[in-house]
Image (cartoon, rainbow, N blue to C red):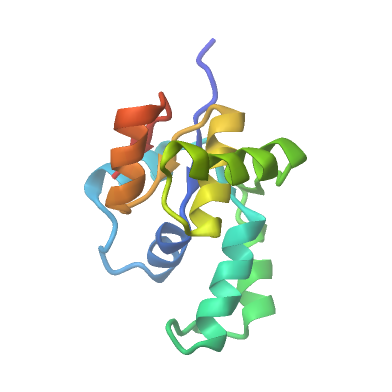
Amino acid sequence: MQALSVILLDTHVVLWWQAGGGRLSHRVAREIAKADTILISPISCWEIGELLVKGRVELDRELYTWMRDLFREEQIELAPLTPQAAVGAALLGEVGFHGDPADRILYATAQELSVPLATKDGKIHEFARSVSSLKTIW
């Protein structure tokens, strides 16, 4: 029996995937296409709202409708935001992870769930290579 394929998406990956247009790497697009479960963190929902309010992204429909439609897709699930991930995110600063709280929560969530994190963020890839065993993909 083959293990289920699960992946957690960074916020920009969620936006680029939903927008289409080829901004994803071939590898990430392939991993998303073959995933049994695509996890999206509550922090990404918040971050997308923040980006929309600040005028840094545009959506093709109202935010609540966009989110509702996103989570109606069969393989998409809301990643848990647990106390362990929240504490883990806070402690990442002690080991040199950069200061973005959303990135810290995403990273700690992927660590806790032992799933790969799809991101283009070079700082996250560098940290994962040098400090932890978390698999990041781009």
